[in-house]
Length: 463
Image (tube, rainbow, N blue to C red):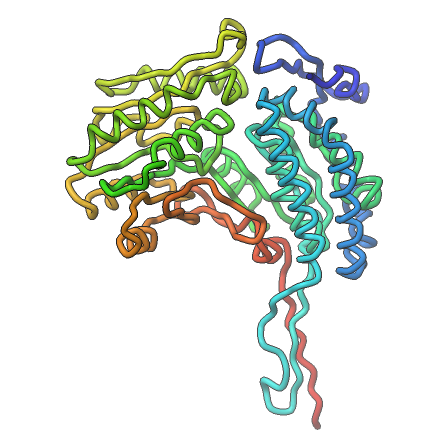
């Protein structure tokens, strides 16, 4: 299903428009607004007006409204699914699961708004009583990517709103659909101006960063993240800038290792920042790993088990990285017969083996349904390879030796690490990057502090 073009064409006379395409077919599916200075200024001004009332609510009342928003998303899950699929081409099962996660996130933060951890308070200085107030930052500009249009919006917006901020959120140019619907439901559940959608392109994003917002939360590429940080100046910035996740497979790995990694590498067509990308195994197990992964990936078909790449630019980038690889073995699966491979952005699951250590497919985040395989002489060399790239978001280790596995997990340079699994996440556990993967925390109660600032209050109680 695709959203009706009229639902997306709500521009003002001063706005520019962009044509939207269906990544499954490459065919036009409507138009969307490219917001410019007037729209950005109006959205930020509306958020500023709404801030006073929203931030003054008790955590209990904010929680009730966030829970109401979660109920609206759940009630209209079919509409959200249609919009998500129109912009991303994801299979129905993936889309349904992600919408369930979005509902869970808003419900989680509806409760988390009332449970806070604070520094020590009391008589910390003789004759004085002190405590800490946690206050919202203000108006938060949120910029989310095209790989998870609704889910990434929830990751950013739910804790920001729970902390008492108002939000102006800009979706990716190719996927404005579901965030527009979320903003409509937020207006009903939270109040006017509390959460707004600002459709547009990169220029819109730059205008939002340079506007009168108090903080910017950005999820996207490293290059764009550096630009956001430079434009934001001294204002707080939270950045999630992608990954290039290693998966260390030891000879005693569980029997389901290859199938589990193949599924994680092709979920959302590999367009997940924490998806496994670089498989590293010991020389003694190298050929078995290549064969096992090739078989597991070969059983997963584009168009049946996962969707297309999101847009022609990403498809071209993927093709460039594959073409420039030094891999001596380039093993590709297939595309389901009913997928429109000629016009859509479909790419098969792929395995690259026998490649040099500085191969572009190893050093860059490919962001597609692809795994590379490298070999190391021992576990220390495998760990060194895993930590050899500047990105440090996710990583996994696969072994039935619990002591060895826990030791390697502890020494991996990653914000999130898994043992004998990959991409297992929940609202209660924090997610964030290191190195060029950015900084800041998504998910868990710790994310509330991303969008709050402490104020210490000290009162002299004796003369």
